[in-house]
Length: 237
Image 1 (cartoon, rainbow, N blue to C red):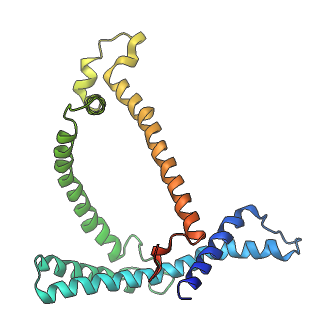
Image 2 (cartoon, rainbow, N blue to C red; image 1 turned 90 degrees about the vertical axis):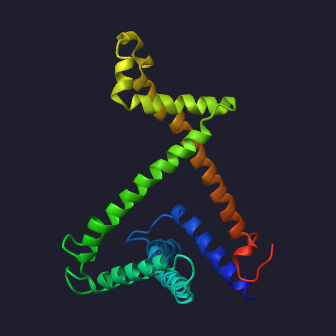
Image 3 (cartoon, rainbow, N blue to C red; image 1 turned 45 degrees about the horizontal axis):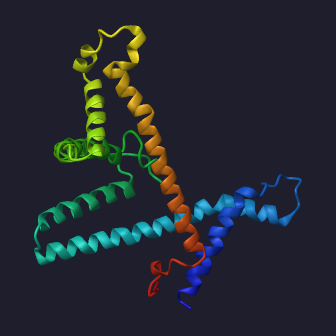
């Protein structure tokens, strides 16, 4: 029974969400109950989801605090980083809840231009994010070196495309093929780079998105039909 109730709720809500776009929203002159009920659900489902998201945040914050507090108390490896995480989390949470530097009250903008929270994001979070991305560039270069070794035809195509794109983004690449006449401008490195990004790359990315969409639909159907039982506590496949 404890697994049946969550499945019924999940299936009912999913079916309602699927049917809602296909039901015409009633106007003031429409007195039928069914379209009005679907219109009400369409308008309020997002509010209900936001309420659930609040509880999910509470659970996530509680899990984060418990994990890092336990690590600090036990003095496990890297516990100093847990201290930084706890202090940062508490500081940002407090200034966000109190809306320090911004208008008071529940309706005040927590991310206004003069709030402390905006200052934290502009002068602490964004520089740290840029620093992490800058460090990741070296790891990407190392991974690219290992991936672009000519061990197969696919690796050769990948290497050629990457070389053209990288060269086409530099002044040297533009200069190397600038001597080509206008009739052969499509063979210039910068033009080839743009073509690779717009045509093959876009086609491959859309194929990936289509695959993700099909996988999402398949998983959704399994959830609606109750076939994906392992997401429920105590459920077995």
